Amino acid sequence: MLSYRHAFHAGNHADVLKHCVLVQVLDHYTRKDKPFWYIDTHAGAGLYALDSGYAAQNAEFRDGIGRLWRRDDLPPAVARYVKLVHDLNQDGTLRRYPGSPALALPLLREDDRMRLCELHPGDHKLLLQTMQGNGRRVKIEAADGYAGLRALLPPAPRRAVVLIDPPYEQKQDYARVVDALKDSLQRFATGTYLLWYPLLPRPEPRLLQDRLARLAPESWLHATLSVQAPSGEGFGMHGSGLYVVNPPWTLPAALETVLPFLARVLGKDAGAAHTLAHRIP
Ligand code: SAM
Image (cartoon, rainbow, N blue to C red; front, side, top):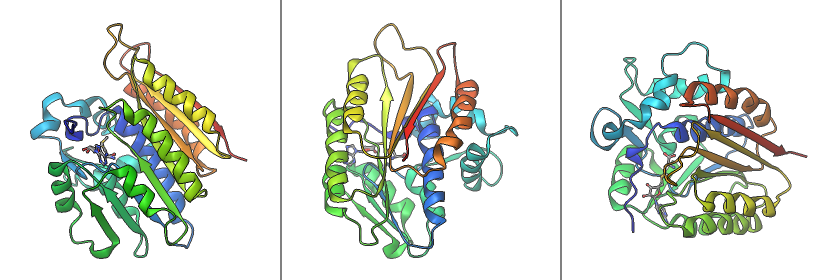
């Protein structure tokens, strides 16, 4: 079953949290003069039109990137991410939103590599179009992201940032992401892993959080951003979480400012909130 299309959600509050942190992590990696791989297990279409097609239908971006677009009081880490979105919309009108691959691409250097998996045939085709012209720097597989990740680790340069970002349309994803993380840490313990998950009024996200807590890697950070109170009807995403293994040491301080700001600016009701926990020895 592959009914999920990220285009419906591009640029929403969950993308803002995930992409803001991704940019912080990639910036940190490029400060060291050593190549690395960026691995995206569930890459999506790469780039999204906001003024037509799926993204325009529910216009979720209006309450995400749309609320940040014209502000001049952004914390530095948010401003850095919004600047990258501006670079794709140079006439100043928000028409295009970068998925994780298009966001990462301008941050990578000549010797860095990108490895992307996307299983949906339609999004895979769009991803190929978006990322074309990058030669051997970018490799795209129409493959299962979990199997793809197993095959890629450990990466040749022994440095990697991995984004694990499945749609969770199938309940198995909640268990599979933790298994994938566990397996990946055995294959390559020093990589930086970003695992995104939705906050829903259902038991699965809570169980996932418990599993992550039991994983207890040496160095981790866990951030959540809720933009509204959970719905009483038991459906709808009220926020999302990001669990980072081997985060940059600079990330907690950046998020101390970013998360309250995002909760305030993207919040829709009094349920808007954030959490931040970390252990970085
Ligand atoms: N990472 C993207 C971003 O931040 O812009 C968004 C990815 S979206 C949340 C999840 C994507 O995973 C969808 O495009 C979906 O088609 C794809 N997908 C679903 N199951 C997959 C699997 N087993 N392996 C690889 N991709 C999969």
